[in-house]
Length: 236
Image (cartoon, rainbow, N blue to C red; front, side, top):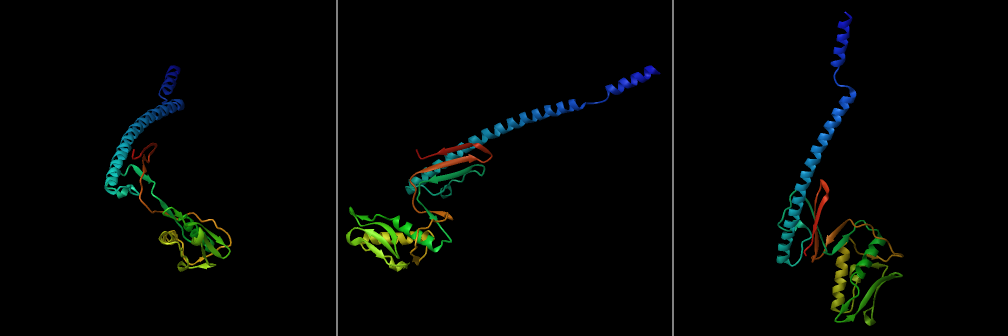
């Protein structure tokens, strides 16, 4: 009887199953194997995306070359060409095209500051080697368009309407005058302008408008799911 009990106890010990330590070891081994599989999969995915991004940049660059051949400048974005990049690649085109900041909700003083900035943006006014007006400033209740000899202009304020802003040195000044007014309006400014008592800081622009052709670019392509897969291309 004693032998039978002893044998039964040995059987129970032998058939008890996995211990906690053994189970942990099994889980660890499975996790390691899974990690190896995932790393291998990610590696192959990364290599595939790397090749796709390179090919996308190459194709986009060719489309820009074709665009330049017909237009003698580069477009503001890749969508203006006939090339459509794959949805899995993020493509951004950076150019040297001039951009104009657009503002909204300007205060009276900020509106006046924007007008002064637009005015100085077209200074100095030079025609056939002769310099006429050189800078725009507020002085008291007036705006002074400083210049040489008879080209010096005082725009009387403190309220300046669009019809009040007239430059008098001839064709070059008329062109500058029109450019100043149109740029001021395009940026979100409005007449009448109230001459401020002090300068004001402009707010951050709400948007940027492309105002001219581009002669150079930098093309960027990246794989969104792999931050280190990124390529750039230039015209050269």
